[in-house]
Length: 339
Image (cartoon, rainbow, N blue to C red; front, side):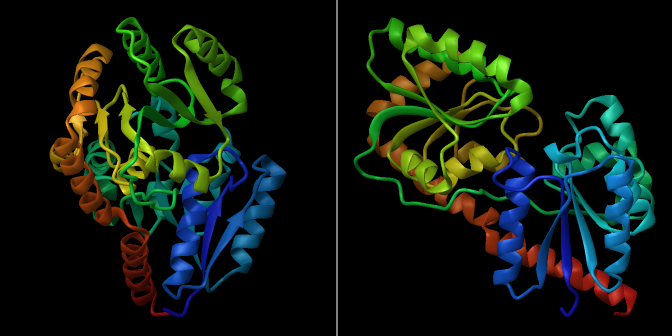
């Protein structure tokens, strides 16, 4: 393809934002695939800042504009929606099913002039089409990938159970603390690790969580680099991801664990893909997770099977696969526009 691609985001590393991390990784993957992809990072989304963003996007007449939404940098601004109305853009919606009703309503402008809407899973696609059926024909599903570089699982893994992700509400972190209490109540000396980053607006929540974990000797590793995360996960025996809404294809933290072949215990809901049933162990409660962990800690062959299945499954969301899906989308758009 001969057109430049501008990936619009309100956040990028070192900003604490999962979508910002994803956008940078996507840019690198597209560049590796031969696409002239550039990050369009814009931090001011008030009226003046949005006007500036629109001017810059309109000046890039021949570029394909691809908005990533939401990001921490956008805040509550409707600036990205206004951009998409004035400058038709591909839009990736990273969340819909769990969004607040007002947030869902705010996504409506994206469905008017965007030539394509990218959803991160079939479940998310179905949720959007139920609310906004007129957008059905323009929706494409492209999974998110892990922003952590893959690393082979060490044969000398420690008796460690780890969680990785943003430290914020609605991630099931309280269940990890309860799991830790059960571990210590049984007198086990497992290394219990919470790996992640804290959003400034959730600092009070994080402090309370950390304080509540002190009696159970949970080790917190905050703001690690990608290489450090990969190294820790590769030497960990089990991952525990107690998502309240269940494991899904939009969970990049779970995908990071699967990419290194880490056997994982997680939760299941209607949005959990069936393929995960052979990749992970499901546990509805911390008590169930603890019993599963007890079994898996001693079951070397089962852990090896889960690890192999995780590595095979992770090929479906490799960055090469994701980049090629985007290239196909951009070529369709380029052909449709006659450029």
